[in-house]
Image: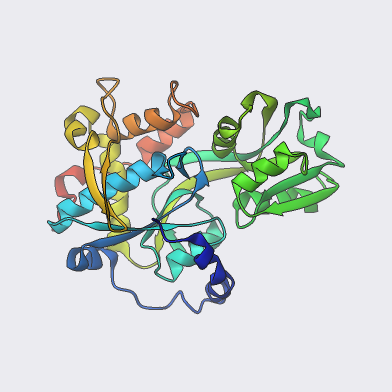
Length: 338
C-alpha cells in the first residue's frame, strides 16, 4: 500500500507554514543520486485524482502518463546505480505536494503540477512535458456557455491549485461575479459537487477536466467550456539545489523524446519493480503502434492518443515545445555519470 495521505494531511499545516516562512528551504539533504546509489531507494509522490497523468484505477493501482514515466525513470536509475532500486510511493494531494518535496519526504513528484514562479521559489522543476490551460466544466443542461454566464452562479476549484488562484483573480478583477466560490479538497470532490448540483462550474486544467468527464458514469451530461483563464505548463517537482538530480530527470525526458519505442520495447513491455515492499510486474506498452514512435510518443498515445479514454490532440505549439527542450548529445553521456 502507498503511504496514507490521511496521515500526511495531519502535518500539512505545519509543513506549509515552514515552507512559506523559508525555514525548510535551507535544510541540508543528501543529493538524490548519491542516496539512490548508496541505499538503492527512491521516493516518488503521485496524485490519486489527476487523470490521465496520475490517478488510482478501479483495481486500486496508481496509473497514468506520469506514473508510466516514473516506472521507466526508476529503470534508468537502476542502470545508473548498477543495482535494483526500491520505490517508496507516497500519495500526494494538491495542498501536500509542494511541502512533501521541500521537507524531503519525496525525492520527486510526478503527476501534473503547473510550473509557477511562486512554486519555483521553493522547489525545482523539470523541463515542461505538457501544456494545458485552466478552463471549466458544467452540466450540459445548465445553459452555461461562456465565462459571462457564470455571473450569479456557484463556481469551484481545488485548494492548493493554480486554477483556484486564477479563478480568484478573475473574480477579484470583476471579470465574473459569481454567487459563491466553493473550495474543494480534490478534483474527485469537485466532480461530485458538480454532479449533485452543489456547484455550477468546476475549474481545473482542460486535460484533467477531460479525465474527470470520462470518469463520470454519464460523461455525455457534462460539457467543458474551452474559455481559458490561465496557461498551465506541467513539470515534475524536485527539491531545490540538487542540480545533478534535476539534470538526470531532464536527460531522462529528453531520452524518451529521442529514443525509438521499438529500440526499448523489451523494457517497455515488462518492468519488474518493488514498490513499498511489494513486487510489481508492469507493462507500459505491449507494442509500438507506429514505426516512428519515440518512447514519449508511445506513452502519450496510450493515455492521450486518439484511441485512449482521454484523447488530447498534440498541438503544433506543444510539439514545438518538446522539440525546443531537447539539447544535443544527451544519449552519448547519460545515464552514466562521467
